[in-house]
Length: 589
Image 1 (cartoon, one colour):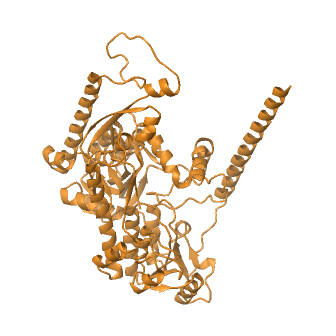
Image 2: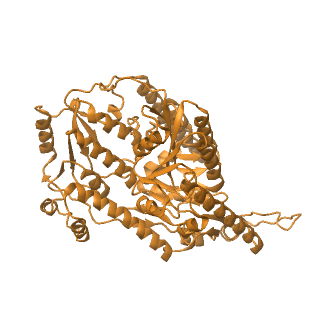
């Protein structure tokens, strides 16, 4: 009877938990329906300030997923992507209703290349004569870099500036694998191809430290140069301030011209009100990029050119199959490029690559379509935060490659990982395996026993073959010899600035630079851009996530910033076949 009640209460508890989860899912679904069914006309008043709060990871374009966490059912509005943010800044430049821009900053957790594109767009906005003011209770490093584009940088009197230089941290899991008796069997080409170092070592190799310091230093130098240009402080002086952590104290930051004034938020709002000629700032005076993006722009002439430039977004890891909003699927992207190639109204193509690489075969499938399209119409690549390894592989055949100065690219190298779980199953789980085979290598490739030397040699040959193919494609696309490519390859990562010097890219700039270049090559004076692949409708995306990705969102909510470690472990598990990807997972702060 005791066991009966235990089972009954356990069943009741399970039923209650399932009911609660179902209730949350249902409520989320209903709220989503109401949110998207309600079409509200966006009104922009004559005294409006574009308020930019960029405290989220900015993707290249807005993800139509508006699905919140189960603990935050009210936040259904999708965060604007880089494409939409740049459009808002550009429209605001000539919109008479927008008087200026307010940068509401503290932390901007996006990639430095993304932030630089926004910063450059803001520099262009300033040519309109309209103001840009930045205010923060504190500024984390990348937020301060963006804030310095402003006419005035304001800081809370009790705040501080995080200005100390960049550092990069790599997570190593060799100890974990040893505890679990899992042997990572690794075959690679390229002395800088360090993607597998976290599996084999406890610390960075000298080659890895060399390349990491080189690109982090380049990124820091670009940031300091940008700050120096707008703040009028020499780069040597800025490095002295960073070395001594002298901007941490708000009074010191003011004395050193790191900020322009120390004021409280209410004083800042009063200053904004005076700037636009109102008594007090109310919500109608402030508009976000996401809301402004849905407003009617009065200065639009309404003309639509018949000539189109396709902007194809390739963002995330590269894998075989269809992929998703955050994963580049070779089948889907190849199909998209093929569709664009066959569309006669599309006169040029800009391929926006923001990827650490991934599956080698998937990368080759995509490259084939890029190559075929290049025979029909101009193809220009725009590189985002990352266009490394497989990301560079799919870009190398383009007519021109445009990179941001802080883009991480190159990493021309390949590797393979075959985990051996024999020790884990035998020693940790008490599970053993046995069987028969008709031929010497019928079990190739097995994860329950170590590879033989002959099997390792077979894989090594395939790695070498793919590497030769890789540098061959780069040589053909860049007009270089394979020997030249091999010298700068070996899996090494370069910033956009360095990549320009060694011939891996043609020009420094952002997405708009690439679009303008594509138009110039195609001889287009009047054109419009069309984005691909087509995003799913918001409601379709929500339904899919309700039943497919809720677990991921719950984990993200619970683990917070530590979710990236789980994500990295899952990424390692997904490795299949030859890999062409970034040499390691690194967090730059």
